[in-house]
Image 1 (cartoon, rainbow, N blue to C red):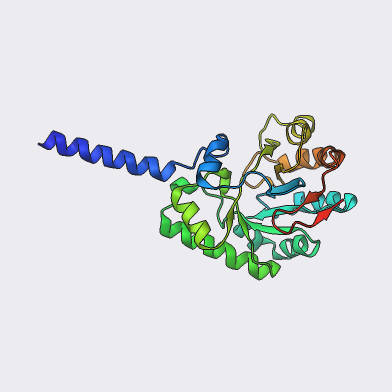
Image 2: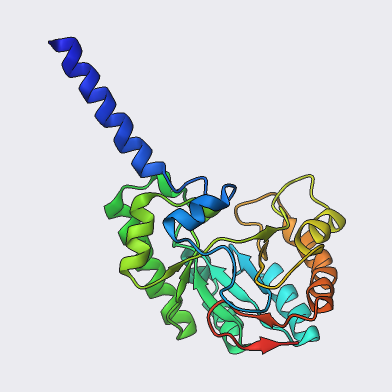
Length: 240
């Protein structure tokens, strides 16, 4: 009887763990994005450049300058603790016409966060970002792009759209170069692509933003060469 009880307990625990982590592989298994209704592509035409982990005192101004040079807009998934360190820079992103999105307050894997702690994190991030930018974000991307079931539920209850990507530069890697980042993020772009890049190195290898910034002109040129407009995730306002 004890063995049977233990087996049932183990099965229940296993099922609970499987449910908790079910959406986690969505960044590399597109079918999971469909299953869990997580956006990885735009609903309409255009290509969207997105930047995670900022603001960053050097990386973000560099990216803003490059985007302004091409007169294009992007979407920035801001981290609350970084916004708290530099609210004026977060406000500058919004003032330049870029979309403000939410990446949480602390850059911590959702699978390690209890629902109550995660709810507090998201609420704190929202309050911090709204205070600095005057904008209420409409899109949410979790740290590392990894959702838990609790994270998905909390995101939707706040009215945010869970968003991943269809292309990435892998610009956080130590072995990345401007050439590899530009190739991964820019070659073969098509209508509807959402491109993941980073304007900060707070949670990746030091100075990774420099390689992203060096690759950005080629990525923008590749996107514009498709004839598709560069758009933000939710505004639908084309630029470039």
